[in-house]
Length: 419
Image (cartoon, rainbow, N blue to C red; front, side, top):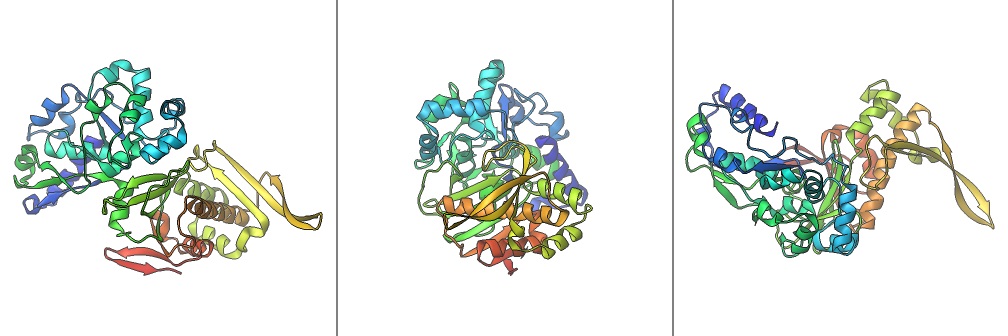
């Protein structure tokens, strides 16, 4: 699928008579955490591509496994716990690699393949992330994994920015050889291979710069470089990221090297239940209409009259909870002259309250977790991206809950103030 996607992009540009000869350098952004397993024949195949044929027709036999584990994978809990135990616990792994073990990370996924499909692991010559895989296709050889994307594997020493011997040994044998070297996010991976020169008329000296993961690239693309700034991406998964000057180990969230400033770190929180969950509630409670959805948000009061909801269509990452929906009504009571809250679980809310409970619950969780990992509260500002950042009602509620201005990217190089 990844290979065919590149074919389709290049063919569409070619059909529009795009002048590839004007391109000086190529780089890219790829979905973070996915991994690709090259077999022993792959290096030869990459280096001898026939420019008269599409890539997908030539690389079908280049892989030791045909399905790439991606960020949605939650099947490696057993491997996560084993890796944490081998390095001295979850917090020790977080100190070492920037995160405790996570099911979607490539390290636990590699361990699972080694344990359950040893013949596949044995026949694997090189393991790429999707980012380094796409760069490999362009240079006609194995590209390095860049440090910022590589930090999302539970395998890299976050301070040394090199593969961790302890983490590698806890994952699978001879793993460093299969991973290759790490590289800085901005270095040149190589020149575009002859395949693209002859098939699409690229210049022979066109550079291929390291590809990286979508999350680090988002931070770089938004020019997020001031501690106190937050970016919130409202997509299939919701992500929050900001800048930190030092590494503070935590059992929640993730630390990556800053892709722009090699002295700083990128802090990130990830929620699996994002836009798909919002769309599900819209379809069930708001007549499949965003206009009705937004009207419900506007007509319901802040804090929703004490109605609180948690909605998980997928096994949630933060907090780690199974699929399910939970609704509570918070009621005031007095006991020993102290005011407090009494919670009562209910089966459902009325439709407007359901909509507000979802959005308030998601945003309040984001604020609570950013404060828990030591990010500034309130933030200096928030830059909102992703599909749902077009929804001004959601962004207005975000500004109220976080207590700061919210901006969106209207066009490259310009931010628009929302609230």
